[in-house]
Length: 183
Image 1 (tube, one colour):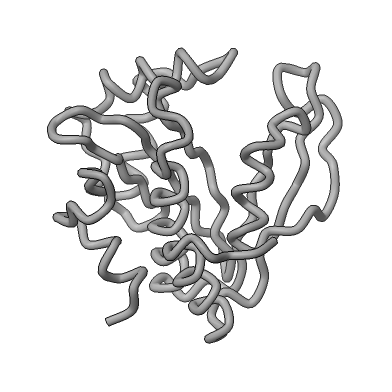
Image 2 (cartoon, rainbow, N blue to C red):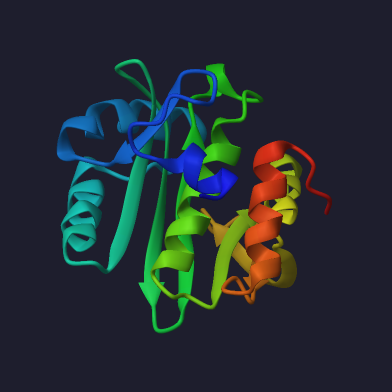
């Protein structure tokens, strides 16, 4: 069993008391509180409910990070052909810099591999250098810019991680979870 697999069991409590589990409608209230704190134009409960429905059909994948019973973060993927797109990843601002985003990213990257995706992609605000650095650890590299993507004011950096089915990418994930990944 790989180190990533050990960290990513839904019932796992191996990382500072944080467990990862599938997103359910009962989590939406707590998710919205985080969403409203981290995004200028937050998703609505209706959007999350629709995404959860799509996850049940295998078109999306959403998880929450929990500390005991409290939702402290969440992440999602959209599957399209042979790639997986990171739809969102957010952590309660009071819990930043505690490895929660890293754990969520590792979990969804592993799920993309299980889903047989060949690549991961995402958009990130050009001003969010902390998130960009996290994504670089996961093998993402800039591929372009979407002008005025966020609120029609801020550009998005488009990033890709290719060849995620390769053994080298699994090794990268294991190194990230050990804290020894390089950009």
